[in-house]
Length: 420
Picture 1 (cartoon, rainbow, N blue to C red):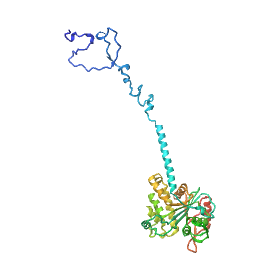
Picture 2 (cartoon, rainbow, N blue to C red; picture 1 turned 120 degrees about the horizontal axis):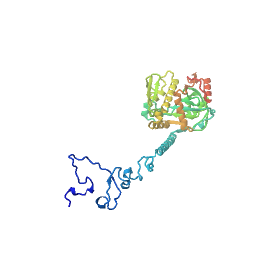
Picture 3 (cartoon, helix red, strand yellow; picture 1 turned 30 degrees about the vertical axis):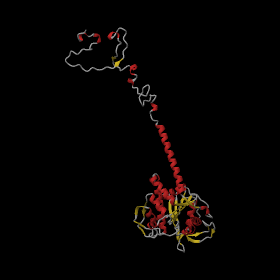
Picture 4 (tube, helix red, strand yellow; picture 1 turned 135 degrees about the vertical axis):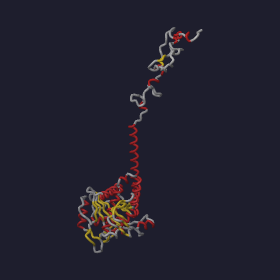
């Protein structure tokens, strides 16, 4: 038997079972990584031929022992590799394809935009009231260059309640009459907006009745707005064409309620009021200077007549300024690019307009852009040239100037004639 540690076999190693002779504790020993060594030949090595056990050595476990854990291999990625490494043959399965994503996102957005635009077009087109048939107008002058719109503001109270009539100071007269009339010419030399005073002295020629279809005799000299009262839009177009010689391509009409609704839908229109105005008949009560008018105030402003020195001629100038400002407001990015403002504005306007059967949305857009051009200084606004008063008190046109103006419009030339 062995009596103690001294009798242990020294083949076990120099420190197995032996303590340090020093009074100081031994320093911490560093565990070295285990490496599988070669098998010992029979009869050699420790403990009588037992194979040599793994020894500690630098360099980590042998690859044949650790199965790849020491070389960075990740579960699920045979052969090792690092996610995102371009040399990794599995990287393509995990990295997102941004080019493909961008392509499909762009395609989706374009598709949605096209569907929205097409849907909006058909929605808007269906709301236009194409009630005026210009094909029934007889003896029409030849069409010239450019496009001519006859824009009419009527005093129609259709759709207004009793309270609204009182609030808007419209009165309760039955039927409808023309409160304002303008010719808007669009062409290559900028737009021209010409107001036709409703008290203009004109000849009402023979015409075809809009309902009966029968030819009716001429009615001689009369006020221009009487033509509308007698047989509506088609006789008004016939009268304007007969007295000017200018072909009217499209007809646009809006009533009191529609006008006020459009102004409110667009959020009001800023106007520079030229003077203090107080008119109990129209309801206008304004101080001179810049201010934003709501629908009620705007209607009162364009209808004001008795508070102005020039009466009807000054009123037509104010109407031109306001309609141009309204078109400019509608055509701004803040309205066009804002669906919460654009659709209510379009709805209010399209519901209120009465147009001819050949009017398209593109024609309507052309008209609005032309009116915006007038306010932006790209075009010209004027009254029909007036030479004085006729024997019946109506305003007499200056026919030499009118003839020159019409020739310039027919040939789409720059307008040089000035109006009142």
